Length: 271
Image (cartoon, rainbow, N blue to C red; front, top):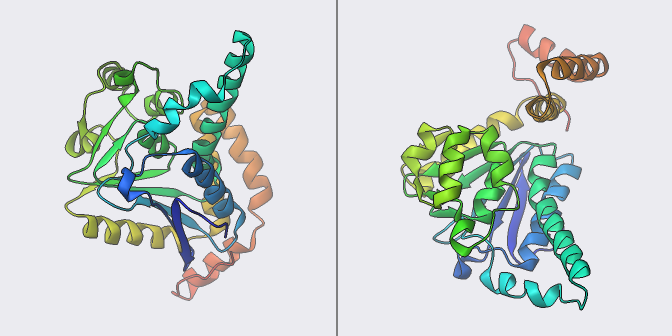
């Protein structure tokens, strides 16, 4: 496991837990946290023993967005006497930040986000790249970038219209208004609302255990096909799953599942 300064990570019984750990800064994303998020999810992807990931935040809030000190330093970081070259540097920086959050989506293991308190700006960009989202009754969300005079650029505008009604996303993006937990659940942004942090932790871990008990190869294939189908036509999706199963239906996991079903036992799959 990589060494982290802004995250806490551990893994047991197939479940990796990754926690944002800048509680004194409301888990705002500084340069180190951006980098470490990418490292953490690449580690989870590459580690066979990890079957599912639970993402959460320490402290009062899940994530308050990008660290404003980092944002304030952007102009100095891209400074160049040539305006075109400065713009090219800024574009490269934005692409790097996008890649950090896309690591959640590219991780072959399902990512479950457990959200409490504020989840705004880059925090919402982050959880939009997760597979499943859960929150507490006190949680709230917002596309906050409009309030600092910029366009959200690391995933919300691209992923949220695939999760909820596009008209709602436009309203949130144009106004920057607060989306409270009941609305987030009603529109499908989150799967479930829990009354407390403790109830959410217990409930999300229970779901993670259910996923971890399934065939890892099948879970990884299901995520791959769901992501592919989201971005392609039905016809393309059907062709892709036909190709996938032409290769994967010979896996040992199918025999393991069938034998367990016949003997009425719980199947045990290899990582």
